[in-house]
Amino acid sequence: MMKVTCCFKMGHDPDKVSQEEWRQAAEDGFVDLRYMKSRIDPQDESGLELALRFRDGCAEIGIDTQLEAVSAGDRDNEIQIKNQLQTLAALGFDRISLVKGGRSFSPQEAAELLAKYVRDIHQESKQKNQLIICGSRSSEGGSRSVPLILAELLGIRCITGVTEFTGISDDAAGAADAFGTDPVDKIAVKYRRDGLLIQERVSLPVLLAVGDVQKSFLRVPTLKQRMASASAVIEEVELEADADEPAEFTGFSFESQDREGRLVEAGSAEEAARIIYRELAEKGLVNG
Amino acid sequence: MKIYAVINACSPDTEFQTRNIRGFLSEGIAGKSLTEQIRSEDIAYIRISGSAEDYIPEAVLDKLTGRCADADLVIFPGNDSGCELAIRLGARLGGAGLTDVTGIDIDRETISRKVYAGNLIGEYRLKRKPWCISADKTFDDKSD
Image 1: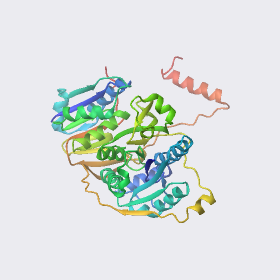
Image 2: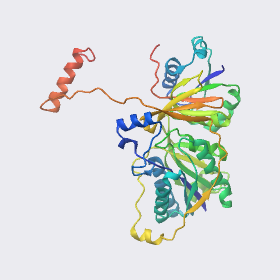
Image 3: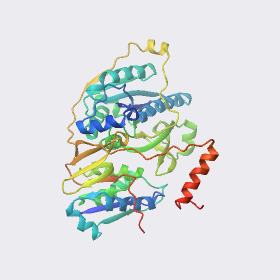
Image 4: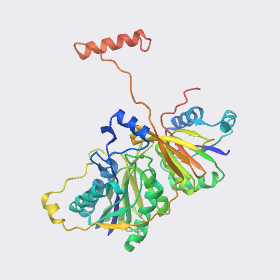
């Protein structure tokens, strides 16, 4: 049985906020996006969908998996988090948990809460087969810190920029491993690092920080699935972190993102291209 | 002040890394106490050697933890491996690990970095050394 723990965070789409609102938020010293609909941070969402695909693939090759979803959310988002957890239960997650606490711009605290949850809450989490999934960066702080600090606290390997991960069948693992390692202890991972696309077989336990993955929207449960999971109970956990953030967030400043631009009026794309090329040539930027 | 700058030669983008760090050193640092030091180039460069196939961050971190034990400031480039090493080395050494840093004021012990997908700049007060930071990707030293 391979245990897969998926961590996720709720956030807001920063592209839906106007420049003027960002400017005002900087002047006010805080950002209040509660009027906006929250959603799972995109890379966390990718992680959840990849975990479901991983489960589906493992089932085809005879590997049992246990999926759990956990969010160490801040109190403003608690209702939205619970709604998402119920959706994940409908999609087949075996355990859904909310770790209460957590503040914005406190990655050390978030990592410590998640580490305590993984290490201490469920005794079976100490089993060797442990795969932890996180998004690489949040839409809020975007520091990439939480999965990396979490890996350090747990003392396990961390791979960032993950785009895909799959189980390894007995046959494939048996042929590749001369040391008789249990195939359930290895997975195949694809990830990006510094412009390279790398494929690797990785031993568990490991933490995978999911990067940008195309076509990885979380699937939508059917009405039948929702009804079947209606009695799913969200485990609510109160934990305290001893975190003393090594860097204290003190405020915001705003830098204008305005760009200069000019509309080229032309009858066709070719004519517009000629106009632009002529102007660039006059400025010496291209060979005229 | 003990300053290290780390170049990961296991990655193919070493030219970017060098220009990124130099750009940060010339434009991203404020604080009179550091100006003289940077002008005299009293910065220790650490070059991580090896191949992309053999690169394992945990092994590199084991070595960096020893090398940078006396560091006040460790600067990494803004590529994927640089960001990862900055955060993890900061965690291992009990200091601060921060990425995408757009500026650091040595005298005030503060940094600024992009937040909310670059729509705002977040200001942070550094509480514990060493400060392990990765430079924002936009820094680029084009001088030869």
